[in-house]
Image (cartoon, rainbow, N blue to C red; front, side, top):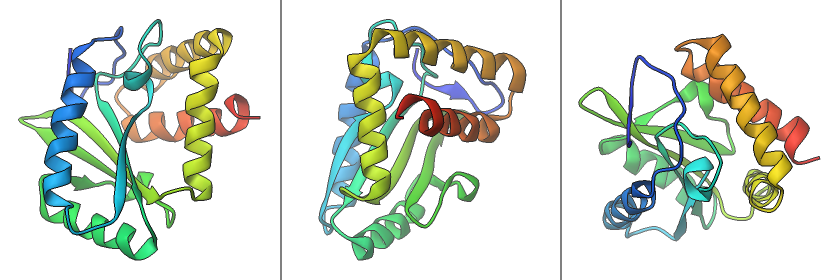
Length: 170
């Protein structure tokens, strides 16, 4: 399954279509961001596959060459079909969602390539990729958050980030 209704929060098993959806969205992003220096990557649980549960939303990171490009990319995404989510953004990382017909299909994080935020994201990705016990623990935490938070997606992401920083990448 791809896409999560805006008023629902749930997890699903890996779907190989997530990688295809990422490639299509990456192509679209390359067209609209062609003026800037950046790299694009598929991150999060939808990128790792296997026995990792995920919200059926493809997570994408854009690593800008510098802060000037990061801000320009943020401003460009704002003019296209991406919604800036200030509650999940910071000075170092801008967070966007792409919602179509009431379903969120993509989240985009824009940060400076190799910044501190970038390094944390990479460490988290590597921890989940390399350690099956961390994957199981992560599944449990995500399931518990979905069960306790209901439809509060903002609090879900904030709580998951806190767990990632405090427990997964020690």
